[in-house]
Length: 119
Image (cartoon, rainbow, N blue to C red; front, side, top):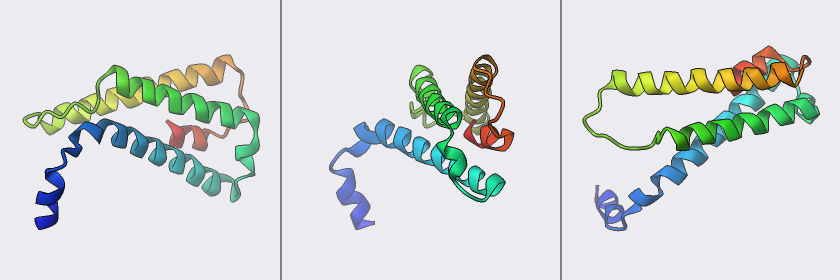
């Protein structure tokens, strides 16, 4: 407990948003790598131009949604249902936008498993 008291003196709360965005990006990209390993048993599929494009677009869209919707605003009295509702809406919007890019750019050789994990 002493270490938590010591850390609280430095006021790290201003860095929460940056740290949460970085953590989201790390988790999103780890999910994409694992889905490639599960589906294809190697990472050669990440060398395809379309896969890299969708990965980049997915990351940018997710960051945009997080910042636009002010996702990391901490409300201490907010109910769990409200938090889950906001998160589910963001995931659905993200999946829809990425799916629109896949359809319009005609990326038919991208694995649906990888798309599912990257959304």
